[in-house]
Length: 232
Image 1 (cartoon, one colour):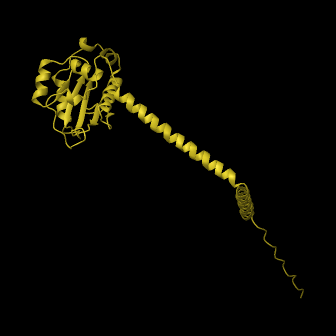
Image 2 (spheres, rainbow, N blue to C red):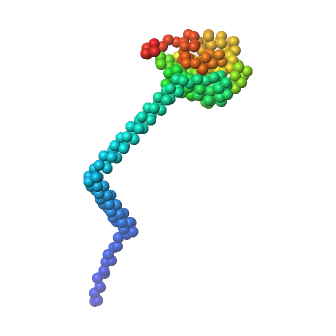
Image 3 (tube, rainbow, N blue to C red):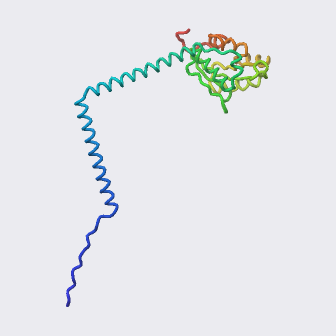
């Protein structure tokens, strides 16, 4: 009988995936070693040239101080601008209705309502500007801009009915106001008095926008302050 020759087993070569992993590990090790070496070199250089680090820290401190000073100056100039804010009726008449709402918001901020913001737009439910005065009272303002000023269509009772239906119930207003650069009908004024709404017509708006008195000093029967302040 003839003997069978022993079968030689072929050695398995590493697959492509294993080779790729080995290459990636090698590359990672090289990059890590290079990074550590670079960090060590930088640290040693800084230790030998410590004065460079001191200069960098001083410059960074000066830059930070300059940035803070610039911010404070900007805030001061903004406060001065707000305190001196004035509008004439011709300016207000020429505004787009959204810019008119912005102007009313700015006037409320001038009067000390730091959180005054414009909220007018679709689905505003009768509120164009909201603000909290220094006495803690919540103001909800509806703006009615008339491009033709006193010659435009007057604000009527239906406009006030919308404000009356949402200002307190929906927006939680203490003071509900409608502001217009136009006219207001007699029945609308009567309805406002009955429902404890406040009307800022063209004449009142002219005094408020061109002067320096806050709006609550120009309106009658404004609710008492919610909290005592340094102004009271």
